Length: 337
View 1: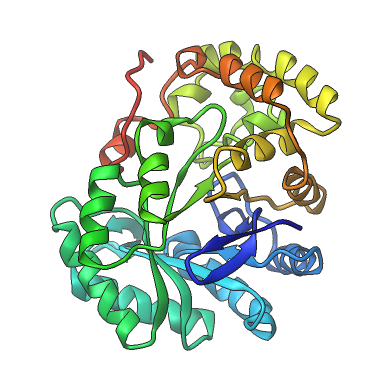
View 2 (view 1 turned 180 degrees about the vertical axis):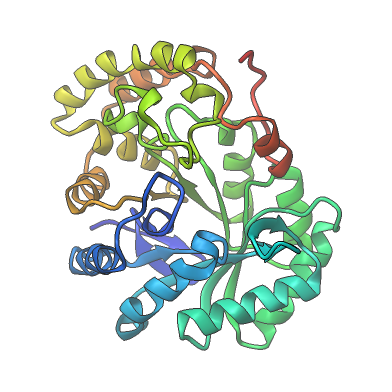
């Protein structure tokens, strides 16, 4: 399998985002099924695993830690803080973005305990708390690095300007943000800025939250707890328009000799040698398709066809609803709907 660089780490060009094993896309698999998928990823040679304090409100770290522990010398383990579950007066856990230094330190130490490790290889600020200067949050992360609790620092869903400010405070190793054929916001500045600064771009949701794999013909079947339910591009009207893009995409996939999922992964990896794809799944067969995408080579003509087919103006609906947009700092295309 191809490898690429994330700072000091050599990782597989296609990693595994572990969020799906604990929440987000409907009912998660059982812990045993989750462990089986992780074991399969290890058997297939995956060396990049990504989790977060938020996922399952800590349950995801508790799940992946013991499975990955025997392999720590050959994998890169990533987690995130600054957004976690906090119990309210009613005792119910709710996600809270909090980038204060004391909170980031507490999040990191909690993650270390749940993961059962002494050091996290790559530690991200999950979301920038805009009430706290980015320099303060990253400064505390830098102190965690100096203390040997983390090995490298990352940011998630920030703009090129914010990345530059953070990088001045302490070298940033990776930026993790959504990037796929139908979410091309990275091309508004962060992809190029990462290349200029020597920062790896870790593309989460490279399959467009499942859309680009063709496995969701009807978005109305999404459950109420599915995070895609309130996203504008998954509304019935917008989704019907977006589905029309899959037929011509399938023709390109057939020409390339791969599945839709593998084609989507391959396109992401063709956007720069500093780009790593981070899909998530609960199915072994889907993981195998994703990993195959790391081996697919696309011609210049195929890339141009995909770029035109999925030009931002062709996508119906924005990627987040109003609340989601307020929580990220990434550059956004102007859209209606």
